[in-house]
Image (cartoon, rainbow, N blue to C red; front, side, top):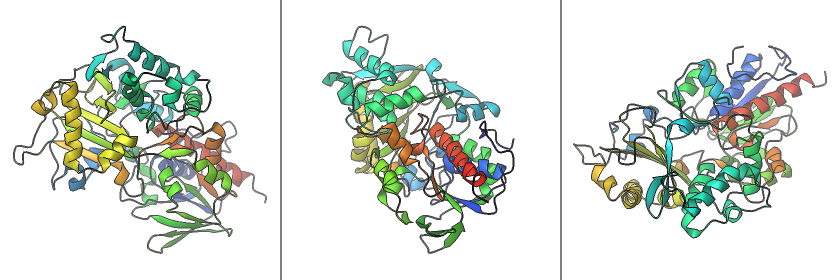
Length: 467
């Protein structure tokens, strides 16, 4: 098979699918690339229109960035001490036997299992300790019990905050572990659908980082065979599917024709209406969109002269400015002096309204509270400019993405997730992490699984079409 990310199902029609038309794919993220890979392997003609000038969507490596002012706050890159990849987007994947995990194994890419390597820390009373060090703390126990048992939640339509019912002292910790990790705040994430989706996952529960290879580089290398099919810097304004041949119009008035279209753009783009559909999308699809959110998102990476958080630390949960810290070097390098902060929801929206220097100052202030001033003491600065060595990515302000990952609102159901992904008239199809129906929405694996689903739908529609 040309594809190591196997798309074969029990009723796979074989290596070639007779189809005289072509399929347009909107978006060159993980879902779009994989869908193109599967379809071309079946002999189906494909082209991809990507709005930005970069391949990978929300998988973004610091190594590949050229907009230095945006990322570094100056017109040249900083030199980080880290001897491992730094990610500005997705920085880990779930499941060693997931679609992405199997592909990584097939290419013999070294990885780090955070569930076996890192010892997480938990912030309570502005103090970060391991679970063992917090032994006997009732608030930590309540949060950990809720997180562990979330897949078995059987309550009604409640938010994570309502369903957990933890004390005010533990709310920030709950917000980090059971909401920020899903892209939002604990008072917005719906417990009922999250529980069902976590339980539905088909892979193991390992949290894994790639040890030496940037995720974006691996994605591009893995799908190198379809790179020539991508047209960058081509935002789509409208899709007209009233006729047998679909007409796609870009922002400059350029037009493209296809017989089927796979839309893989982020949920925020679909909900904003920046792509108009003619006829308009059915109410089933648009109503389902309203049951899911996609909040502000920021990644901040800081470099230090000393690791004061612990060499074995993995994640550090429970901040208010930054609900989720990652010791990026754990299991990767002895030079583990870099922290990565992932911030979604209200905290990210607040930071997004600040200048870059204010964002970094706010994160350092929180670190100083937790680590007795060591953050300011040991932060690395550039010797020539005296600027803090850091990288930031405000996904809220990223054109054509404008946020983080999708999450279910309180009232969302599994049927809503299915309705979100429903094809329209065997012409318009939907993929991307928000449309995954196998429990991995919001993740790389969800994007890839959605590509497998949507290509199966397209191949079935071709094979079963009346002659």
